[in-house]
Length: 447
Image (cartoon, rainbow, N blue to C red; front, side, top):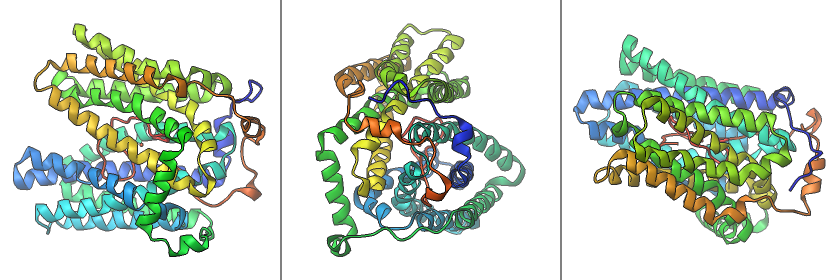
């Protein structure tokens, strides 16, 4: 656990780093563009087929492949220069949106194309996260993660608003062209805003080891390490179990789903702001288990069928508990091997997305036999149970390395800033970021 004398970082310090501003700008563009693209594509497929099932499948077609990408290709994150990985992925997204806007492919080919892009998206997402600790040191790293988490919620809400306006004005084809332009702008921001980074060094064995083999090996090593495995479970279990509640918001309150989704997103933003900016680092780590419990407790009250304004407040309080992940970020960074930072962060992100998808699908199936309010209450109980099961990991542990971390400068001096990129994500997604409403990545999310 870090000392109480370590002061909290400020937003001024974080945004004083030029490379961070570039990464933040490209991340905002990515969020808006992908949200518009997914919404427009879902509408386009529905217009062509009249099938709600195919429309929903088009919206989430890139989700499952991301899990495979995380399991098979993540070692590329630590082998490919960050700028190349990010800008290249933005160009792929631009081409994807242009092809979809042309509306010349059959639906099965559209789904296949989306799945192919989803397979490589974890590489770009992990590349963003990999170099954030090289740009920001000490508590500035944690605050930087929270900034990306807050942006994920706010920009996706904006993306849905922009997407809805574009659909009304220029239709789904025009909205997809907008998404292509935004992706191209993001690629330009990364290409010309970030300095070139040298290709990551590879050992003799790494040069001969294939991508899939290296990914499996490092994933096994990470999950085989008791400390790393515990911190991954701590990031995954409380947050991803409660994400299932958002999967049954529509059947719970079909006429007011937007209000409840907005409440969940607002609670996440509020928690990241208050805990990330105004709570000192040592206290933030001590609050971690209590904030994790906060995720599940409010959801239990849905069994009583409270009125709308109460349910909205309960979602605000529950989602604010997602800020518990901020207290884990420094410990996770300390625990992972520096040579595999990108893959470790990519594994955390991939696990988050996969577990959230499974949890939401399970909640949706359960809502077929139980009242939605009771399902949400059971989700809250499951989160509480999972949180209590890992409470030892959630509690801050004294570490001989913690003093060195606390002593690090808050922000890396300009001369020592390594060129690169950071983060965060969640409901099923097609890119490296989640669709709204957002549940944190360790990152995310916050990253």
